[in-house]
Length: 252
Image 1 (cartoon, rainbow, N blue to C red):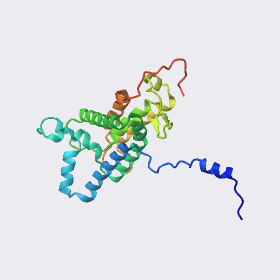
Image 2 (image 1 turned 120 degrees about the vertical axis):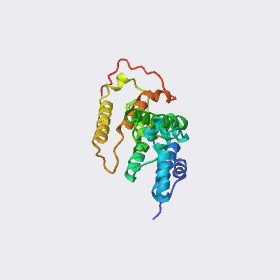
Image 3 (image 1 turned 90 degrees about the horizontal axis):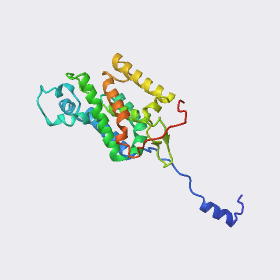
Image 4 (image 1 turned 45 degrees about the vertical axis):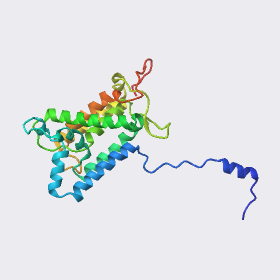
């Protein structure tokens, strides 16, 4: 049974905006691009390349510390390995966990920095990761692969914002100015996050227990990336400014 509708009701219905629909994958293009590259490389490794081709890709794309001691001569891949290793992964669990963490911490940082600065940050933290790894294992011959060093850098960057995010622009982004280290150390939640992160990485790296990983966790690369992201973010943040934190208690 229908009821009569007045003109005012029709006008009100026409003027009422449609509810906004959230996209299923609300990730910045640069984040989707990195995930896509990692996925393609992994699928090639697992299902397309022959064993000989896989070894060639591993040798030319992964970071192998011993190649940088000078005893093996020079090849042009020495310039690219400190970056290409981040797009390679050793197992399905490895790439799955890394990409989930990359989406979680990379998306708000990419929305904050922009595409170019985020790409440079990704490259810089990837490089910092292998620099510390090489400094501790200069003659190591085990290939290092994975984006976890750069992801650790994004976690370090997140702490500089007190792990705070905003959605005022419709996109999740880290909020506010960079916090001084003296303030960060007074934020209980951020301090607990940093300590827990360090303990977990050292435990999984030194004692080698991590679900889904056959090889040992490179905690050195994680620490290198985290430190680079923590201290170096200010050089990539286009909205960086020196905040004033006087007269307020930030110990929560």
